[in-house]
Image (cartoon, rainbow, N blue to C red; front, side, top):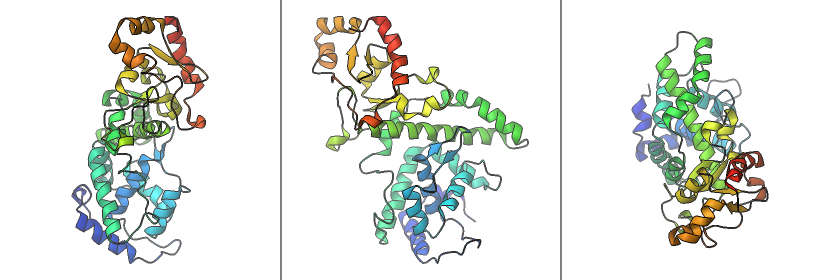
Length: 331
């Protein structure tokens, strides 16, 4: 029987052996019992959850029509539905999920850096046994989009997340009396954290992993990106409700300096995506060379830097921000 350490302490040699067993499988007829998931498969299902979506009920889901899910299902001789079911088992919301699956979910969602290491081990082992990028894409783009950069871009604290899911926890406990309260809270907190990671990843990706206000991008030069960018909420987390908190259209990728100025309503964005500064900041620019370097013509772009117009932040969120900034007399 598998134990937690079989996942969390997965070695490259163990991963290679598991891949070789997977490659020897035959397709299972519809309705027939499938072989148990190997740790490498379970870890990849968790990874799919990071690029999936969080439902209104708090579940982390993956689409059975997702191209990556389809490729992975074909490779491991399973159906996309079985991958989705495994992900549902992991977050502990299915009655038939094993205890070690819920424990794995909690462990991974609380240490996504370690998951990044495990994911790299699984992908590297796949390449060593001859599984190429077409058969198993590096769907988290670790060489180009370090997981550290996404994790560090998420600024929501654990306490804020816990407060946001109090109602979900209470409803779940009412529907499932007798379940372990502490374990359930930890699992649901993990789901909420994954939802924020999905938000951060989409926000950074929409901006091409560059600050939308100045274009700063360490990733473009192959340098470590962690802590260099923030996935900031336009309408702050504390003022947002429900899906607004995980809507990538309510986000901007910004360097710490411009993120702080945006949060302080010293800069804002017009409907045509023009970047403007408040009169208060404009006076500071005129009187301080350092502020001028960061917020003058050389420090700020005229229009938000985004990869495509359809990825632009939502006007309803920008409008909320402008109403406060305009009170400072936008210059």
